[in-house]
Image 1 (cartoon, one colour):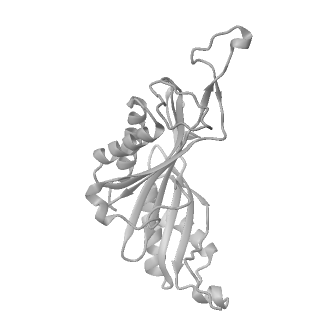
Image 2 (cartoon, rainbow, N blue to C red):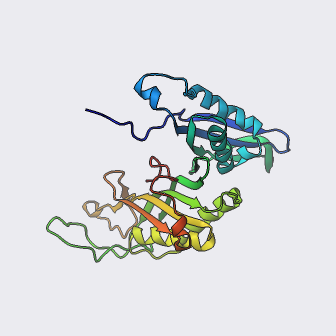
Image 3 (spheres, rainbow, N blue to C red):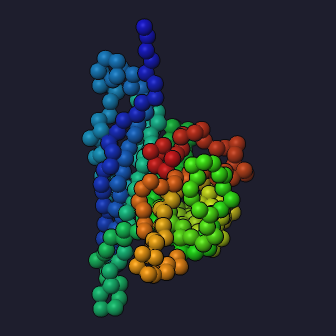
Length: 302
């Protein structure tokens, strides 16, 4: 019998690092959760326990913390911070041939004091999380921006009817329903030197506008429209992936209490839920598209 070591990676997951920029007035703050995954010449670690090629996971954590100071400008944006880390691990550590850096960036809003923004006081914005996944193999660099836990809802302008019927189908067609989801979206950049803040703001604004303005016949249709619009707005985006749980809102029967309910009172049901996933490709960049799961983090959004 013989066995072969397949794909493997290791690193330190979820290093929490907060960087405060005190060299300006007002102060700025970035808040990250960083996970590092390294691949390379690690056969003997697995087969014999020879750790001579092993960069410790503790060292990867220390690198993240140190780079928040050493590469302070890069650390202002998750994509550029991830690029700096990925290139260091691959280019400066001989056994490492690929690094994948996953970053979650938690937003903070400036507090007001006496009617004006305070220079150094903040409140955590729990609305959604900005993400980035950077993968580098010494030659190729893939940068994927994203958003997760972006909960959106529209109270009308959504329908669902005309679907396949079988003996187990009990859902009634509707021409007016609440549609809600928690968006996890990821988009791959063909340009690894984009204006990350501008690109991210544009992407979120576009998907928000489409969700609000699109007359929806299915969540899948709205998902496609969001991705299509993001690519039209930013043609350098090569691919958009969405993962959308359908956050169901069911009309409550109030007739036992002698009350009518014209789509005004709902039960928000958290499970089970429909789960919609899809990829929208930019045909301009289809030949340059990365292999499945090469650029995208399989544990995030897919």
